[in-house]
Length: 358
Image (tube, rainbow, N blue to C red):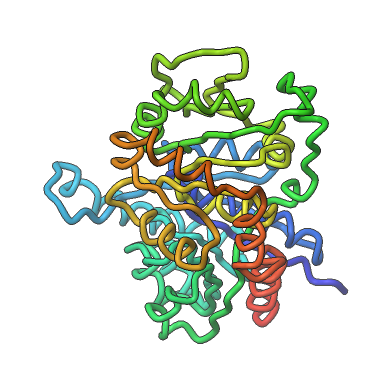
């Protein structure tokens, strides 16, 4: 009789650690019979994302270990304890074969509850520099999938480690430029410049690019995703469109875009690498994104630009960039930077760990 693999995903708090888990859940279903559930936070965006994907979602309390003073430091230990107790109840009720996390403080107490029950834990490490949550979960984990080889050094205690590369949605392979032309009313004969600041740091990027919008419209149709609640007063023109966020049709829009200006979040970077897109990265200042962007820039896979330079010398920088820009050159390097089929590789690792105890 075929075993139905029961997988418990944990995490959330933002879309970053949620999106790859939804992608790998889709891949697991293609590899064999799977039943999955998701434990996430009460306040993050993951509930809507998970339920839209057709998965069962359960909220648990989540605390955070801060390295600075906050009144929440006095209450968060109790939230962490409550998260562990409620997580343990879900583990006992669902009886998963394997627990999977991509890094989130909501996952930490569940990871140790799973370890106490002898349930394997698989981690996904996306950033070059491992975050505190994944480092805390490492002793309770049996396997690791990672994007950047440099991050493996922090996880030597995990028995099985695999360089999987980006874990992305299957729909990213199905983007249709013609559908984007129709949905966004684009001229099929003109290239598209897509600008997106993601969920964090969009305001800073929006302000920094404002003076360049008229110049960009001379060469491109510009589609600007400003982020929810992050729109500012920006110059408009016949070749400029602005949206807070695009969900339906995003794969088509990425397929249609020739050049993309974005933050260095690993969710969108993984998708852009699969598509082989030319990318200008403006990492969120003073964040882990700067290390991610530097690693890609060293290989020539992307063009790196810091936000201060963009804000202060954007016109001069663009003139220099545009004079030497060759469409598709950095995109090809981006496409070959990571191993292909990372989603299937990570799903296979999860399935291997789960079936050992099924």
